[in-house]
Image (cartoon, rainbow, N blue to C red; front, top):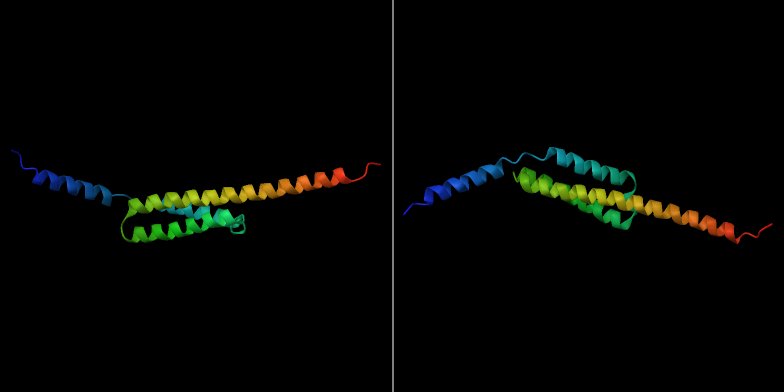
Length: 119
């Protein structure tokens, strides 16, 4: 019968080395922070749903930074991916809200024009 102990130990070492070799997700961090800045600049704080996702993105970036400090770059990268998605969603929700407001203003103008008496 073959002794599996050395093989299990080798397998565990290779697995740990693979996890430890995940690079710091600096590009993903920069992308998430840029998404947050973009959503903030277009006024995401003024749209309730967008503000919620913007806060989530902020929290996720902070969490990812803590994970990086602890050396868990793989999890940090996953959290940063979520932060990017939340920032993009905040951006999209803000744009949608602004477009809806503009459309409602145009509809109100059209209705006002219809109400005017014809000469």
